[in-house]
Image (cartoon, rainbow, N blue to C red; front, side, top):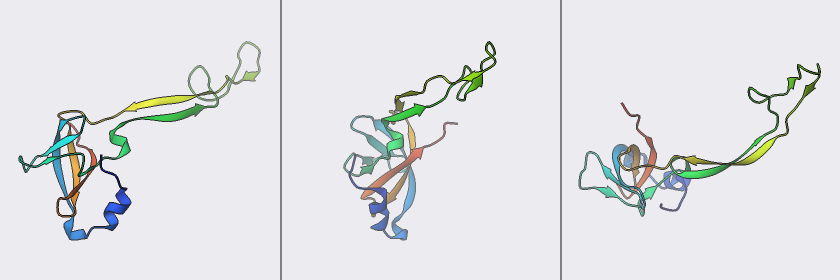
Length: 124
């Protein structure tokens, strides 16, 4: 993955240099993407900016109140009172990395010197 933020990339380009193209993931690690309308153009990690939501990553979570059906406190049918279950904390791994064969939408800028992967295209 290339370093730098989307903010830095956008600030350094002119509007006339921007275009949206499609590509297909040809290799997962390291990530390589072939442009659909340019079979000879293969994007590599040095020119790709990949957002976190298209990777595998961990997120911390906390559930503070739960009942048998979900999150809340609830009345206790047996005693007529109410109680809360103890909260739960932890981490969850989001597995959303691009896979070989995925079709992606790509923002091309700086005259094709940098490519920001926007998202997967919906499967039909």
